[in-house]
Length: 149
Image (cartoon, rainbow, N blue to C red; front, side):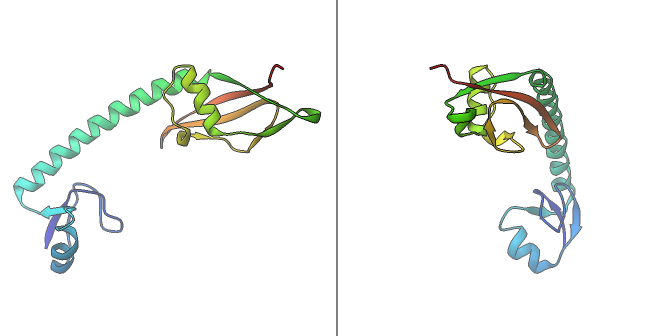
């Protein structure tokens, strides 16, 4: 059976692909889950239109993410923590702490978008990566300072 995919399906194809699958696979899995439609002119044209609209949306998102990445490249966030003997931190600085500092500076960044290569357990300057999209990321500096007593 010839079908046109409405969604990406692992090991089968991507959105808009016209593929030949077995009748049972199409009837029992793909069509009930609304992952495909029979490949006729109307369905193929509709999927192509959706594909073009999705590409425009992705291009706009990528452009705005690149602009935000340029702004973030020069950003430095300051985080103050309590320290013990020999200036060792109580606990560590996490991506949630960095996300709070970014939010306070006016950037809407979620903690899951921030990657810290090694746990921050000491005072000083550390780096973190903010991954806005899979292909767009920015490096920021994290200053960890002693909390004023």
